[in-house]
Length: 365
Image (tube, rainbow, N blue to C red):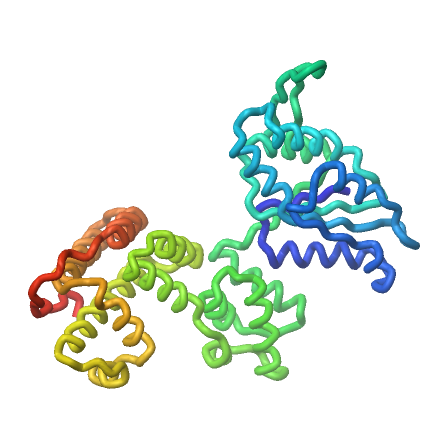
């Protein structure tokens, strides 16, 4: 059987691949019947030749191919012309896949195959030499015909995550209280591998009793804090790709837009406060942290960024943040407001040096 794990969750794929390996039988012999190839090592001839090898003292072999379809999809998109080498290679692969031998389970593991393009949807290969024009069925058509099996393993969305944790806990025979499940989902987010590891750690910590929310608070780091740091760092560094990636991750973890805006405000307010103290000649991070009631780590980061901004810029940014806060609270589209805000803040440029001015009062304090 040919399995397609396309755009699937890494942890769920690992579980399913482990099941395929276990199905080979005796673990000692199974290792002799498992092969793995990565995208750069693969072409249709080698792939099908590898799949055609006879299993050793077993009924089946398992061939795992990682990243090949993803790479081929990107090459086809870059080539554009249907008669290019990438399209010819794809046509050979798609034509020969239905003939893959039954003695081999062939598993394609790929992270980003675009389901709108030719590899998935199919395409027409133009006439070349004595070969007439022909239509090539894509992965979608092969899956519908049963020639391959498309395995859908998406990461659960934030609302479905608690149910996944409960199911995982039941499978592992771990008792966990409902409020602890909700807190664990909020702290870790959609990283299923980390969630599984945290469940194991918490079960050892609870030692036979149900896991409580107090256990989660004691043992699990809040990943949303790290994502907030990534967002505010990206903004203050004027790094648009870092900031937008962090914003997407926070949305995936179901963070409220107003909470994100509050964290952004806090970071720029800290920049103003740290910059003002440095202007007064206070340079030691621990002294600044003590006076501001902050920890040393965020103060040290703010010191490194303070020189990128003038007080005028920071005052203007605080005004812009206040505008966004008011717009969010009066019914505007929160996601659009944050997208525009991130774009604006990461595109700003430091103004020419001028005489320092005292920072204005912070409207959010």
